Image 1 (cartoon, one colour):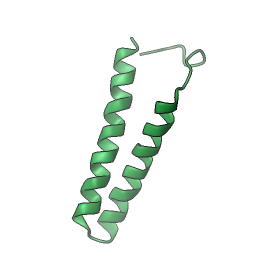
Image 2 (cartoon, helix red, strand yellow; image 1 turned 60 degrees about the horizontal axis):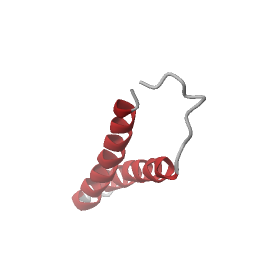
Image 3 (cartoon, helix red, strand yellow; image 1 turned 45 degrees about the vertical axis):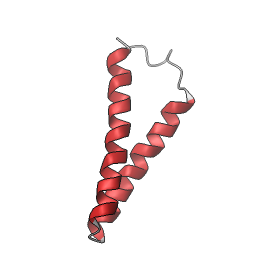
Image 4 (cartoon, helix red, strand yellow; image 1 turned 120 degrees about the vertical axis):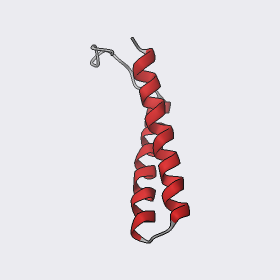
Length: 62
């Protein structure tokens, strides 16, 4: 893992993928509350995409 978080610079894709991950979580929660499987699955896909992006970014930064 990158131990020098102070020196790392965030690019625009970091903010975009954070938004995708956050709204994926919100859509998943909303889909579960209103019992909409389509919305919940769409949220899970978006959240998974964001988490994979950040996981790969952390793994490749070594």
